[in-house]
Amino acid sequence: MRRAAIALAVLAGAGASAAAEVRDLITECAYCHGDAGIAKDKDVPHLAGQQREYLYNQLAAFRSGKRPHKEMRIMSRQMTDAEMRSIAEYYARLPPR
Image (cartoon, rainbow, N blue to C red; front, side, top):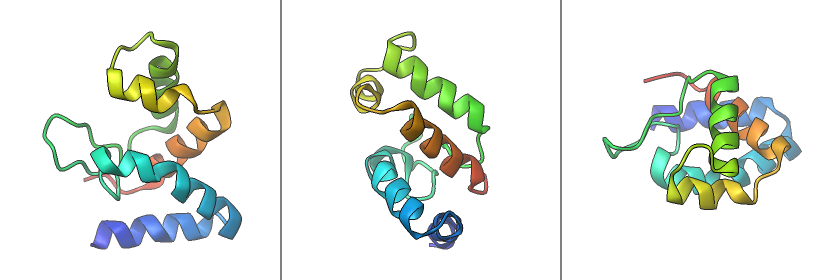
């Protein structure tokens, strides 16, 4: 619960419009990676507190097919560079576990 509150505070700091856009983007991510970037399944990586460029590069690698993962390929296929950067920024700003 505390992590979810921190996540909302991070979104609020981005401005109302940007916060809503990021919230929409990460809704799909949260199913596997958790509401605040902390996954519940031990086989799914935590995203909270990861480096922004690392997260962006991984999304780009999934989208291009350089990093194989069926679900992530599907998720990233429709993302723009700006959306991937917003997602990476959001998770990078969250406190790590």
